[in-house]
Length: 312
Ligand code: VAH
Image (cartoon, rainbow, N blue to C red):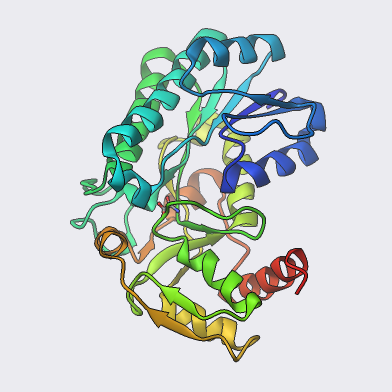
């Protein structure tokens, strides 16, 4: 990777990926693009990922060799407007793949635990298993994996991706995801507010801390392509917890944290169909994936870093 374009750089992952990649490849070698914002950043471009010519122009003018396509309406938002979710999620990906084909770029587009359906094994969910998601988000993610594999085998495009767990981070809030509660609870704890949890107390889901996400994305994109048999949709796992477990962990630091449940039927239905914990042995074998952050150290770090940002 030498010249990188991040499309959807304003989101939860994109905002931290921009900083992370610039720290490795140099400030001016990472162009951040998003439909929103005209921030103080000479290497930021306002870009509609659905405008193929505008994306192609950005790739051409900056001699981009790698595209990170992070544009997505997340699971809960998608269920509120499935047609828009399909149009945005798949329109952005198709543009990225077509432009990558034309300009010989590599492409990374995250998949998700949302790609699995209720008929996949919940524990140690295999890399290769029936993929029958029941959300438009999951349908987009499975289609994204299949399209990315197709563009590699048919056109030789260097496509790679991982199935991300719920991402926990301290810089930018997620928006419209079923796993967002695992970030929002930290804000409530630090602000001394009662936390109203939208998913059941015993609902386990795969979760991952942002530093592990960023490392996984770079490690996969820099991996020896001859080792990659799966290429797209690698299971990457690190933690699995339920609301009552993360609440108890935070209370070790902030005993006063109060949590109540107001179950959101959409997020309840979505999370019920997702894995508890994926089997990530294939990613470990093919490109040496190895998470560094577990529940205890993530909680300590989140409270410290987010606490500083909130002035607590
Ligand atoms: C969501 N945070 O909840 C996203 C994610 C693992 C789920 O893709 O929709």
